Image 1 (cartoon, rainbow, N blue to C red):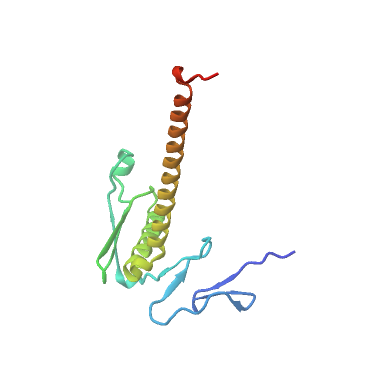
Image 2: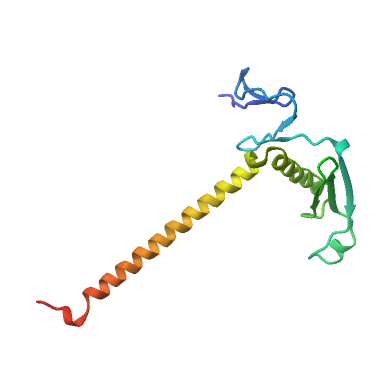
Length: 162
């Protein structure tokens, strides 16, 4: 049996499965990139390298001499919007450059889409799940407290009627 893998076509902004479109074409104007390999195929704005200003500065934080003497911290600035991203997650400049660009795409998505951004929607969904989980835990604690009070009321020494 052959593996069925969708073909992602970034030029046209749609995903096809054996020639059949799965997503509607993107509206003209803002170019998009589909993140291949992601579970939910999030589309983020394309980063134009002409609009980016990149600097390599010395990192800081734990790591001693290996961190403080090497310039592997990437500072990426998107000139039209003025968004600045600083990435010093690893000791590798190449990995930091890639991660800085990923973070920049997410921030630009939030700027362009606002409340409809996938990043904002996921954050709100996670916050809602956390709130529901906390409410459920508090309800369980309240039920336990009421149960213990009922047991204590039943076992008082003056209430034996046998």
